[in-house]
Length: 429
Image 1: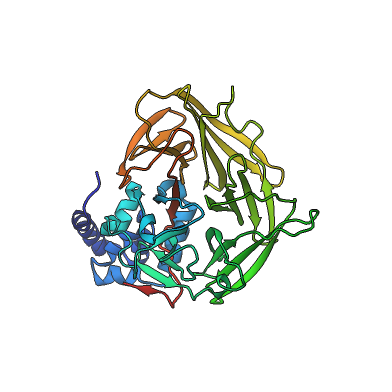
Image 2: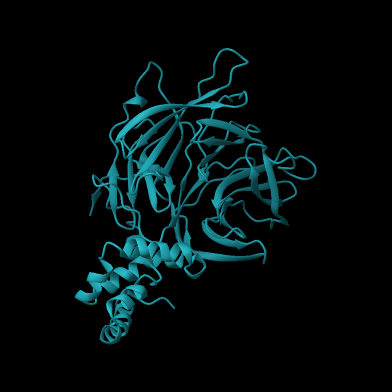
């Protein structure tokens, strides 16, 4: 049972009042750093002046974070997932790509409080398109794909940071198309981050040369943009059109699931320290096992869980109404080594076609999320059990016989023990 804030405060008020009479400050401090989540700690700070003094002590937050990090199994991870439509090459109005679904874990629902309602991002200056996520932060843009304005926000604290205009996007004769967006923490500086914008790759005329991936990088510590070039360690063939898909970060490397038309998909691993990009081939038996059918539909997503990169693939064969689900773990990106963790095959009922996609679970490697129709399910792969979540799409998505007319992007946020603070120049409400 989840108590309301008022009930929780009443329980804590009575409990803490008794402690205040018998415990000294050192004991109370040790008790407070073991409180399950930061919101409960903040509520406790309002009980009395003494509690407020202990919890506002500069030593409290570092000790609170360290306690939760060292004893992670005792503190359930809190996560939030934002779903929105995936635009293809052309990008329309920002209103068309607002969050279409918000999924909260039980702990995240309490952490967000009232801000998890339909007005989830209403503290921002205008309607925003979610571009990337990192921990409990979101990267957003208010306009089209060529917009040079970006924001980073923390939906829990309602802080937001406006990046300076990126004039690098408008330089040159031909327009620059953005194929990917990433938000990563800056481990060298507290409260700071980096934003990466992936440009259309430059392909040299000499066939023996490697492709160069140009990336615009914003560092909040330096408060400026710069252009960096990632060299590909293998020659790379470009397709006729591209559109951005999943990007995730794991152990200092960005993984980019890139689609270049039918049959041209791949995973790109970008080493941020060496400025190198490696093409990661899909597993050898990636795809449908059995007779090939031109009426099959394939969807795939990558994500991270527990410090590992996961690849989820679903093949739906229309004529046989078969569904094949595979979940892979990346062992070594330099050698394209994968291991198959789960494989599920089952028949689909002969019902009207509905939107159908699977996504990596951000905190449990034995589960995935399935969007079927307008509903979101948590699928336990070991127990073969589905559980409908308290979230659904705000509008139905279209699908057709071969390719889905609409696609979804998922932006997971795994909340740290204490909310990430943005640099001092950020705004808050």
